[in-house]
Amino acid sequence: MSVHRRIPPDVAIGETIRSDVPPRLDALGWSAWHRRMVIALGITWVLDGLEASLATNLAPTLQLPQTLGLTGFQVGFASSLYLAGQVVGAIGFGHLTDRLGRKKLFFATLLLYLIATGLSGLAPTYWVFVIFRTLAGMGIGGEYSAINSAIDELVPARVRGRVDLAINGTYWLGVAGGAAFTLVLVDPNLIPIALGWRLAFGSGAILGVIIVVMRRDVPESPRWLLMHGYTREAEAITAEIERKVGTPPAPVEPVAIKVHGPTNLAHLAHTLLVRFRKRTILGLSLMLAQAFLYNAIFFSDTMILERFHGVAPDRVGLYILPFAAGNFLGPLVLGRWFDQWGRRVMIPITYAVSGVLLVITGALFWAGYLDALTQTIAWAVVFFVASAAASSAYLTVSELFPVELRGMAIALFYAFGTLVGAIAPSLFGAIVDTGSKANLFYGYVLAAVLMIGAGVVARVYGVNAEGRSLESLTESDS
Image (tube, rainbow, N blue to C red; front, side, top):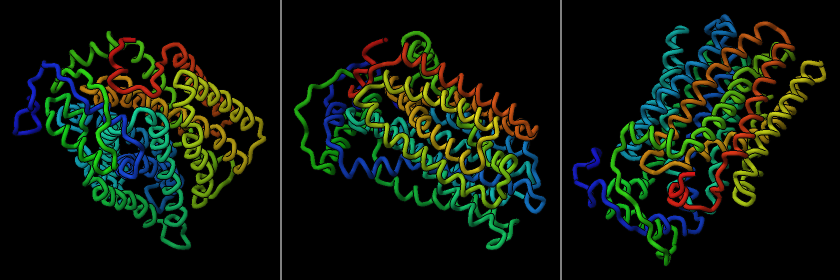
């Protein structure tokens, strides 16, 4: 039986049941309930964007003697450890979200983040700061597995692509919020420099408290309940969702579901490395490329603006706002085409175009044609496309693997991409310290090659997942 409840499941592990719950969830019309649900869950991306934005926008301030007096490498190293914390959190909490359920993990991971990010602003020394940043990363990493699993399991199949991309794009609302906060909080004319950066990290904790309240009414995933044998509870939650949506039970064909209960490492390894080997290669390629690209550019852009374009530390946040706008609008504008034209068309296009645009931007920077404003515009154009590409990576790894191990699969792919991507902030921080435009251009080329290569893999190994139920996507082993 599942270990997360005292009552036994309705169906024993190993038995196969037939249920109309999954097709009923897919048959629902998009509603106000769905919007509330995805906002309450998807706001995790806002939190991550806020944290990343605070880190990058505060980078110049944290190097001042009135604060922690860090070097460029130390700033990048702290960001790398934040990302490493996300890796640990994703794997640990990813296992638990498959074992204990999606809902319990919503609150455990959020609580860890809330406490750690608040304490980051109280850190007296660099190493204390690094420890709390790592713990905050663990909380955010753990959020991804539970949140992405639950959203895909509750959203109707016909809009899953555009909804996932739009949710992932809200990361950049957090980025914009972080930039706006720092414009005020690190302005020495308004708040002392030694205090402002501490208040900035406290803003993340305040948002975390708000999210706790928003998530109280989010249900457990009926698909997860079915997979663990809790058929009556899955039916009751689905009926309640239909009541809230205002849609009566649809005349649908039941699907066969094998009750698995908690999975083990052998089952996970066989699924990823044997049964769905091509999908694993696809997911690894997409996650690696987008993680390196984003961490390389985003965690170094404020230092580039300050060092190469002469932007004052308390003004760098102003330049992040249009950059964030391009990233937010990309998934919103392009997301519908992932459902209409399909994954195997749009994923390769967005990855390859992102890489080409990045090389062009790097060449213009190296040649000296860009100032602070035009550099920001160029980045916004690149990431208008790259944001849709990155969001599609998360969509891919969350919809192509079975329910019983979806949380752990998302966690492993996310951890792999983040772990490799964690190299980028330190690498690009060190590159910025050299003061060489040529070195930065070569770094951009490396990121571009990874993106274009991932686009090729997506074209070869991509799956036509648009409009298909999660159950049908795992019936085939291709």
